[in-house]
Amino acid sequence: MSEIAREAGALLMRHFRERVLIEYKGDADLVTIADRQSEALIRERIQAHWPSHDIMGEEQGLADTGSEYRWYVDPLDGTTNFAHGFPVFCVSMALDHKGERVAGVVYDPTRDEMFASQKGSGATLNGKPVHVSRTARLAESLVATGFPSHKRHKNPNIFFYHQLTLRSHGVRRAGSAALDLCYVACGRFDGFWEFNLNPWDTAAGVLMVQEAGGRISDFKGGNFQLSSRETLASNGLIQEEMISEFGKIFAGRGLEALPDPREYSAKL
Ligand code: IPD
Ligand code: CA
Ligand code: CA
Image (cartoon, rainbow, N blue to C red; front, side):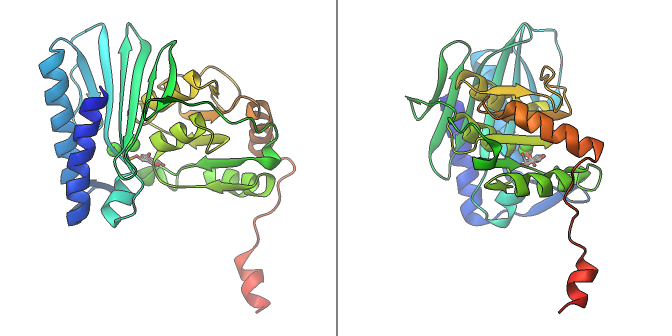
């Protein structure tokens, strides 16, 4: 699995150095030749090794034959970064057996970092075991989020971004959900949340977090499902605090008002 991800990562890097042409799937939803070629390569390799397995990939979708095995493939997570020359993107692949996640890899070709996890066997970064952070309070945490491009105006995440910024050491919005989850797994981030992610964004990263000793849920603390429209991951220690903050934000309680830009400019 990691060999395939590494090969796809090398393909992405060749395109990245040349600066690829941008196409549009939606208003601000980019796709490049690199997304398509990377998925084609991954599909080819999976089919050559395991011809009976089903594959759900972001670019080509799923042909469901009812196989016990299903792959979730994001051939390029972080397309917007990639297309602009911002070096934060990866290849994400996960494998389910009878609906249970058994393995996942996320490969960042810009840093040559291979995140890998196997159910019950822990999580590794370039072969070395990794663990979530030990930060116990949100106030001392570095957390991350993301904004889905085509639904940018349809979810209230900007309010969450603002409130969490005020309650933590900071919120990063780097542009690759799969890497964000891996960074929670290896302790670079203490928590991560996002609305409206897709199964190929989360399948590998979620197993990484779980195998590294972290927790995943929806925003109310309920079980996370691949079809969940809410992803909340953390080192486990700050999960309840994040859930409680989210509850307050959804209820509109204790919110610091967003500064009014008109008031700000009038004072200049
Ligand atoms: C996107 C990235 C981004 C997240 C978006 C995803 P893509 O995936 O993971 O970080 O905020 O929600 O759609 O489109 O680059 O594969
Ligand atoms: Ca993605
Ligand atoms: Ca993608």
